[in-house]
Length: 131
Image (tube, rainbow, N blue to C red; front, side, top):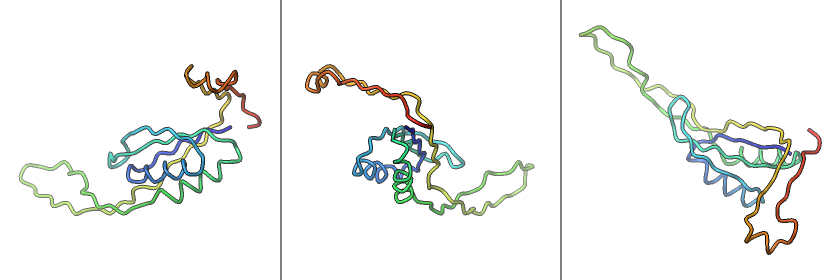
């Protein structure tokens, strides 16, 4: 079993989460920010079987795009009376940063109300097979 952690641009998050859901994957979204431009990012986490990793990578590639953005560089340290006219710099933003981590143990805890309808096996736990 693997945990896929993908940090994607906020603009791509909804499409990625919808694609994961439509393909039967559960995912958790954590809003974050950071990087060079301090942009809005979303960290998407999903636990999957080892054989599903290529399919999740495909969904990430299909839904997370690289974009060109223009930013003004930081002002340099200047002496009084100097004049600096910054010109925008072109940078590539977006895409995804993906981490695939091995899972040693997985446990899904179901609330008691949901467990009553599911029978004795409502709380599931498993050990990862293979690596």
